[in-house]
Length: 107
Length: 124
Image 1 (cartoon, rainbow over the protein chains, first blue to last red):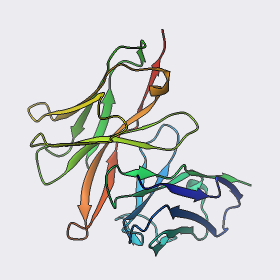
Image 2 (image 1 turned 90 degrees about the vertical axis):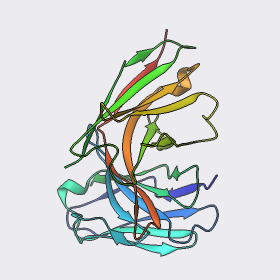
Image 3 (image 1 turned 120 degrees about the vertical axis):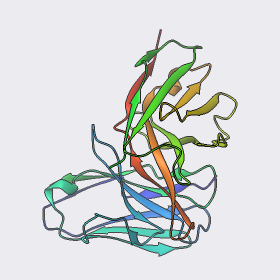
């Protein structure tokens, strides 16, 4: 199975900050990497697919990059609604696997 | 707008079978080339993909759970279901259903619509 390791596990940031979350794969997965946002009691939301393509309706302050084994999700100009848990997921092969999640908290 | 909603018992006894359903609204479950997935998340841990089912009945399972999992689809009721047998406390988790679709001309598979989740506790 492809293991995904996210860092950091959590971070504190302020509204307006730029935040970067890293996801590292245990083997090369080309650009088969997606990012999701999760909030308690709400359906998780697909943010980015194919490592860098923004899902329809997602604000442009979100961006994804990377290929091979190293990927990043960047949130520029952090907004109050962005405080959530972010998870990466690989679709390179089955079983699909996720990172352990990164919690973005309000400083 | 596609919506998914999980339903089923919130408490299951050890060694019994966990049964959940996911009702899809806003789009026929049999339309397109979508796959219908189950994903779970134990408290304080990451998400785990359980498996997926196509409206044709084809399935893929996580090998770690394959011996205990069965997924099925009912196109007449626009819902799909999960059965997980011989459960233990380790199966206690939030269970999500999600639609899987291929993007970029079939290159990238992603979960684009999710339910809000249902908490299932395994306890006697």
